[in-house]
Structure formats: C-alpha cells, structure tokens
Length: 183
Image 1 (spheres, rainbow, N blue to C red):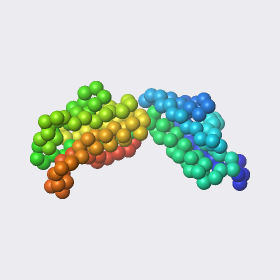
Image 2 (cartoon, rainbow, N blue to C red; image 1 turned 180 degrees about the vertical axis):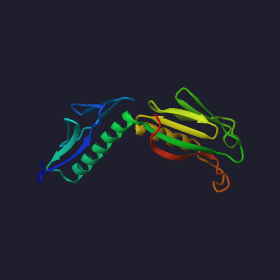
Image 3 (cartoon, helix red, strand yellow; image 1 turned 90 degrees about the vertical axis):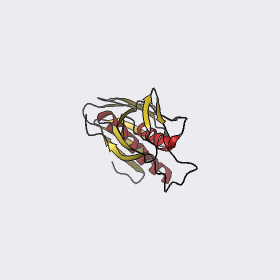
Image 4 (cartoon, helix red, strand yellow; image 1 turned 180 degrees about the horizontal axis):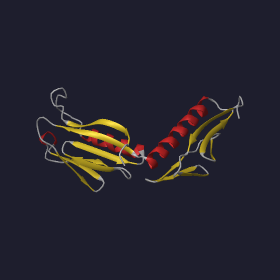
C-alpha cells in the first residue's frame, strides 16, 4: 500500500521469535531471552502483520519520518539480540603499573590503575556478562544498549587525569564490537 501520505518500514520476524505489541510496549521473545521496550510517539503506530512488524505513520512530518526509522532500527536490534546476542571485546593496556581486574556482582573492579591505592569501579548494566581472560575483556548480552553502555562505563573508568595522556596510555579500550557469532 503506497500512498503519498503514508510512510512505513517493515522488520521481518524470523522463525523461533515471537513479537507482541501491547499499546506502546513492544515485547520480543527468542531463544536467548526476552526484551521489552516502550516505543511510543504520537502519529507513529507499530503493528504485527504475519511474519513482520510494521512501523508506520500517516501524513508524517520530518520528525515522524525519523522516528519511524529509529523505531524500526530498535526493533531490528531487539530481534538480533534475542536470536544471536551482542558482543564487545576490550583490551587491557598497561605499560607502567600492571592492572588487576575482576567482576564483583554488578561492578567491574580495576585495581592498581596507574599505581592508585583506591580501586576504580564501573557499573555492569542489565543482563550483560563480563569475562576477563588475561588482558582481554569480553562483554556479551542480548540488549545492545546495556552491553555498549557497560563497555563505555569500563572505558570511562580508566580515563587518565593529571598525567600526560601521550605518555601514560594505560587503560581499557574497546577493540571490537558487533553481533555475536559464536553460540
């Protein structure tokens, strides 16, 4: 259905994934878990039609056109998260003081950063799983926003203050991010 006053984007729902819309709450269930999100905006509707979700707006202005694309991208990320998941790889870099990192509950703890006595901590959000293997840190989860924000929290916890950052390049940095390929 193509009208001059209608814009819509379709997102395919793969087999093994169920999608429901209750008002403005979108729920996606898949083999890796369930994600739920509130996607509401005036004049933008989300409906399930058979094997796909449709995000549409009638007589949209520029803002509504942008929101339609944004909502479709959020739904596609949710579907990708519950089927494959997301994975971030980080690298621990130290040249002056060896860092000791560990996971304690919902905190990522960095000890001996630049020789500091007090440990630095970063929040681990949602269902994100953090694994430390030598100088590599692996973050996995179903919600891309929680995984990426956890990686940003860890990277931000090792920002250098009071030293010349050209000389002291110690820290934990994101090296790879994207969809998870291994089961």
